[in-house]
Length: 494
Image 1 (cartoon, rainbow, N blue to C red):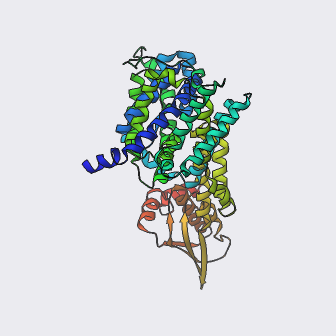
Image 2: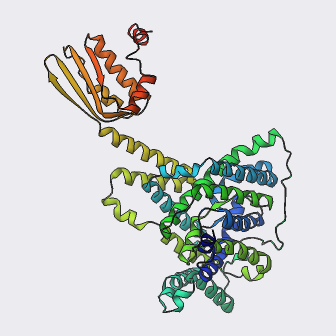
């Protein structure tokens, strides 16, 4: 217990603190922007980001991952806020948390093993593209100073780490933000700053129970939104956890993360904040800045609150160009460039799954739909591949024929199984040897019934041998070819 505590909290103190500060600075404009998307006051997103980051630092299953208010969640809230107002959004946030905690106890985090690597890669590439696209409004119809500042920021981010000693001791994104802010103030540049994004709150968040009637009607209003928020939030969090696992070469507890996200969203709802989830962009900023432990997440949340409440006047002076440079760095670092190089070497099906996931996520801005399409395509390609491996061979002896089935028989290979038999051949006996086969579903059992009954209609004696225990169980339960009454009904057309 003590060893785990030391490892997750205090094994990387200085770097975690610095990384958390960088993340907090990057969270401010994002939280304000997402609040605007959802149609609520900026403080709703800022308070949510503070609450979620602080709570998830203690309850989450992935140390070093950043959770806060996100764009994917904000998009799902627009209609609810527009039609019913902020109070219903807070109630929906609480219900979202409850649903996510239930998902954790149901161990739905284990479903991540069904998401293929090509889907994860597509998800990552799509998010990288979306992060970059989100910066474009800050780079359109602006003066040359903004481009110069952004370019200078990227130069600092990539070149500062090359400086001996000091380059490794300070996170380059933090150096970028501080340097460009000082330069912009000193030169008196008239460029867009964080203060132009929206009004920052000047008070601490307070406990706030949603002012909605506790009735079935309220539940029917908020449940569809809460269910959508819970699914998208968990999906993005699980995918982000998988990416951070890869970046840090460590494992995370996905089911604990589900519960943690739920508790964090309940905390946000009770403090006047909107629902949120893990953020891949900020998580990568944290990892690239050296953050590895829970302390970095806690620092990000606490420092965010300190920034907006006590250092708001200074925070407003940070040029957006500096934060744009950081987010472009995140976009470049997030994109899997190997996936482009591997297009020539990977199977076409793998490439199609990855590209389809990217296209759908970017087109819809909905991560859940993109990942669903990717998983569906990956499943179809896999089923098709396994179905092709099923082989039917036959041998003849006297007036009998033995069919040897090799491979998996299920819904995708059932037609091939049926078409492999010659029902017009005049023969006394047919033996179907299933020693090297496995029957997986009712479709496969139905195919076996069809083959046996067809042969018997032609007056051929049929013997089925070699069923393994699992296959025999499903055939005995659902098959009809050895049940005279059922066969008679089929033969007579009833």
